[in-house]
Image (cartoon, rainbow, N blue to C red; front, side, top):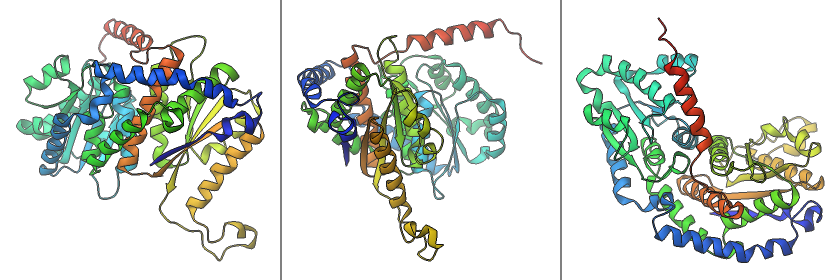
Amino acid sequence: MLSLDITNSLAKTITPSFGIPEQELSALQTTMKRYIEDWLSERKKGLHAWSMDPYDKKTIDAVKEAALAAKACRIRSVLWIGTGGSGLGPKALREVFEGPDTVEFHMLDSLDPAIFDLTMKLIDWKRTLIVIASKSGGTLEPMSLFFACFEKLKKVMKEKTSERVIAVTDANAGVLRSFCLKNNIRLLPITQGVGGRYSIFTPVGLLPVALLGGDLDSFIRGAREMDTVCQNTLIDENPAALLACVQFLLDTKKGYQIRVLMPYSQRLEQFAKWNQQLIGESLGKTETHNPIPVSAIGTQDQHSLLQQWMAGPRKFFHIFLREETKPLVQVPTEIEEQFSYIAGKSLGTLMDACLEGTALALAGAKRPSVTLTVSELNAKTLGALFFFFMTEAVLLGKLYRIDPYGQSAVEAGKKITKKILEEVNNEE
């Protein structure tokens, strides 16, 4: 289902000056074993609540019921409102599951008035479901957008408005929860202790899969199977632990501070942005060492950033992400002679060659990378990928001695913004 090749990050490939010696990786095995055991022990005590979300049958059933109710209303579009993890996760899922036979999935995660106006022109309120996703129910961006959209929905649906809204929020407290109870709006709970960037196996992620007709059971099964793999205490048999060790050693021993997650799949572009938030908010908490996350996409960024990666400062570490099995689309066999080397080949073969060429070029310049391969991109492997990277984030937190939860620096900015707005008069 998922395999990790770290060859191009090792000293034997890119020399001891730039790569990881085998003995350094082996030396970290004992430490990582203890950290995995700690993680499992902490889970039994109720910590790392996100890791138990794939086993929450009550919530999974509630999501299925909500999706069936929406289908019964014959909705044609979903307007998803959320920011941070409540927006990036659903965006990543939309990229994989939306198609010509699904509902249209509109996203509002920005206060940009031009984007809001454009989205409003695309909406048929008689056939639209609004989903507002906000754990606290008090975040500026999604609540501003929600109230603007709710007002428009009321004008069309009148007394049936509540049937066309779902709120994904805290089950026990918050302004959004109170508003929904007052207006008889369906509530789906986000697990206590689960922050937005770890919420993909709450209704924040489960509901988009279900509304878009994805195989929700397979999505959950992928996460559970990856959980089993990630509980292995041997790093050679636990890819999340192995990647965490490689990331930690390349940063702290070799100075590769910038972590580039680069899928060679257009459908995973938003997934890379989700991971960017996961790493940035979870680990960006010291001024000494922590990975600096960047998202890129193959093959486009070969033509925009590869020069920097090949010849610029030695600060970049690449995680390439590829699908093994892809839809079969071939280049015609009868083409211009100078392009004979691509004649009859599939676009998937060309994509793989571009990835391999980039990885080998970087290795030739003694710059490290690893390649993460999924068998094919479907609900099961996507569930596994989400669980894999969240586990890696937690294990990185242990290696760096950083608490991967909370984001106090972000909260400071929110408080300042609120104060500014309280002092601004309403616009006429």
